Length: 80
Image (cartoon, rainbow, N blue to C red; front, side, top):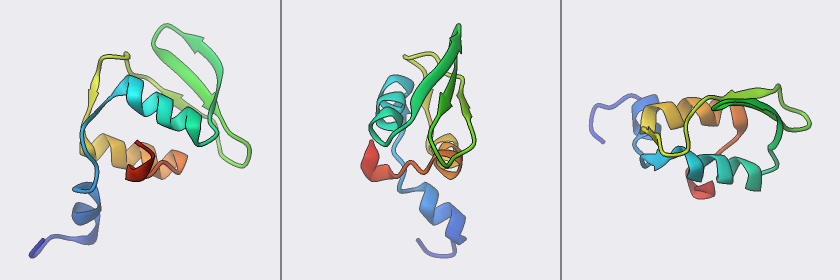
């Protein structure tokens, strides 16, 4: 990408994905459900701060939000 900042070029690696698919990927890399209230799921993983996943299963999560989730959870595009 010409003229794009490094953070923008990293975001383009992320495809949009359904929340159900992202949640399954988080579980595959070691995140576990700690508690749930409605669509708010508190996830835990040893060595990481808890992460609140607040999406309905059919929600479409865009590349920018996926990049934010990745920063806090260690998720990578290859995990999806």
